[in-house]
Amino acid sequence: MKTVFITGITGQDGAYLSQLLLNKGYYVTGLIRKSEIINTKRLDYLGITSKIRFEKCDLLYIQEIISLIKKYHPIEIYNLAAQSSVGKSFHEPIETLNFNIISTANLLESIRVTDTNIKFYQASSSEMFGSVNTLPLKEDSIFHPVSPYGISKATSHWITINYRESFGLFTTSGILFNHESALRENHFIIKKIIRTALDIKNGKTDILEVGNIDIRRDFGYAPKYVEAMYLMMQHDTPDDYIISSGISLSIREIIYYIFERLELEKSRIVINKKYFRPNEIENIYGDSSKAKIQLGWEYEMSFFDVLEILIQEEEKVKKIY
Image: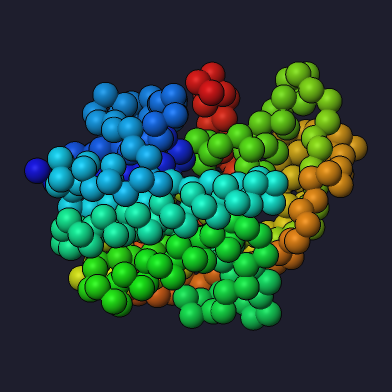
C-alpha cells in the first residue's frame, strides 16, 4: 500500500497534489490541525474528498506525528503546512516563525526516529531570497529574506538540507515562485484582483483597493507546479529545485490586463498605503533549468494564458467558496 501524508492538504497545493497522487494509485492521508474545522471545499471542487483519509495532528507535538507514522507507515510525506501569508507574518511574526520552523523540524525528526526510508518534501519559497542583486535566481543564490515568513521558510529549508546531509534522509525542497489557480486562498493578490474585478463587473462593488502595484513577481500555474513536487520525490537522489516561469510581471500589468479584459475603467483602481508592506521585494524571477534538465519538468505557459483560465474558472469556484 503506497500511503503518503500531506500537511496543508486543504489549501490550493494540497488539493492539486492530492488529485495527482490519487490518480497515480497512492493512498492519501491529510494531516490537519486539531483546532481546524475541515474545509474540504477545494477537494470537493476536484471531486476527491471521499477518497482522502483525514487525521487531526498538531505538528508542534512530535509524539503525535510519530504515532501517525507508526500507524500508517507512509512512504512519502509532503509538508505544505505553513502560515503562508507574507503580510500576516509582519503582524504575527512569532506565530509564523514558531509554527513554520518547529513543524518542519518535528516532521523530519519523526522520520529520523521511526523510518529513515520515508521520503520528505519541503515546500520552500521564493520569499527566502528576499533582497537580491542578481537575477534570475538559482538554487545557489544567496538568501536575504525581508519578512518573518521568508525567514521562517529559509530556516525550514536549511533544516531540511541538514537532515539530508547529516542523517542521509531523502529530503527534497521545492523553491516554488508564485503559482496561482482558481483554488487559491482569497487573500492572495491575484485571486483578490480577479474576484474584485468580477464583482465590479457584476455591480457588487465599486473599486479595487491595492497596495504597491509596481512590484514585479514571477507567476505560474499551480497544477503544473505541483507536478514538479511529485517529480522531485521520484528522482533517484534528493536535491533542491527552483520552480518558476522565468519571467516577472508587475502587479500593475496584471491588473490592467484583467480590467481591459473585463472592460472596466482604470479609475476604479485605488492605491491604499495601508496595504504596503514594511519591507518589500521590488523584482524577482527564477531559473528552473535544473528542474527541467534533471526532472524532465516542462513549463511553457504565459501568465496571461493563466489569467484567462483563472477568469473563466472563477465564477464556478465562487459558488463553492
